[in-house]
Image (cartoon, rainbow, N blue to C red):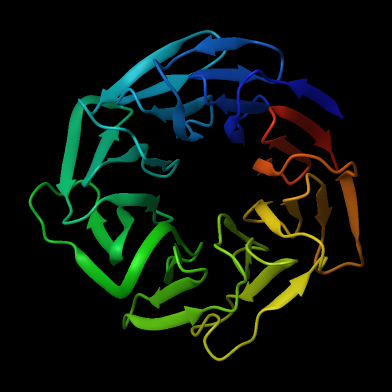
Length: 321
C-alpha cells in the first residue's frame, strides 16, 4: 500500500487513466505520484473523472469548474456567486454537468462555446448522466428531474416523491433512476412507466452507492454492512429483498466503491477500516485493518484492481487487490 498524509480533509478520491487522484478541502488536487495542483480559491466540493479519462474535473465554493491533470489545470466554467454543489461527466457524449444553487449547467469539452443552463424550483443536490450521456437526472427537493442534455428550451420530466433527495444515479442499462434521501432511504423509479420503488430499512442516511456486477447489483452504505439491491430483469428490485454483507454491529458503512462491469466491492467504515469483497465468493479481506477516523472518500479503479481511500484526518492510501 502507498500511504499519504494530507494537511486538509479529502473531498473525493478518484481513479483516472494514470492512477489515483485526491481532491482536497483546501482547493488542491493531489496525484498519486506526488504532483500537486492548486486549483480553487477555497474548498473543492465535488469531483468527477474527465470524460477523456485523463485527470479530474472539480467544482469549488469559488464557483469554478476546473479540469486538472498533472501538467496543467484549465478553467472550464464559472457560476458567479454560487457554489458548485455536484458534478458529473459522460465519456459517451463528452459532456460535463454541474449544479450551482437551483441551476443545472451543461458544457461540452469539444466545444468551448456550448453551454446550457436549466432552472429548478429548488436547490439541485445531485446530477447524473444516463449511459449514453444524452439525458441528465437531477436530485432536488420533491424528487428527480430528467433533462435532455443538449436541448435548450424544454420542460423536464419530473419524477415525484416527497422529501429531500440528495444524490442520483441511472442504472447501467438506463432503465431506472435511483436517489438517496435525507430521511435514511433510497427511492427509485422505473422510467418506462415511472413506477416507484421504496428502498428503506436503513439506520442512517445513505451517503454512498454504486452499481456493480454489470449493473445487476446496487451496493449502498448506511447500514452495519453493505446493502446489495438486485437489479435483474425488467422489475429491478421491485418485490425483492436486499442482502447484506460484511455486517458488523459495532460500526456503520460510510462509503462504498465498485467498478460497474466487475463483481468486486470495497467498503469504508465509520471506524476507519476498509475492506473489499466479491459477493459471489467467500468472505472479505481488510485492506486497512487499523481503526481510526471515519472514511470520507473511497474509489475503485475501472478494472477493479485497485482501491483508494481517505479518512477524516487526511490520512489516505492506495492499494492493489
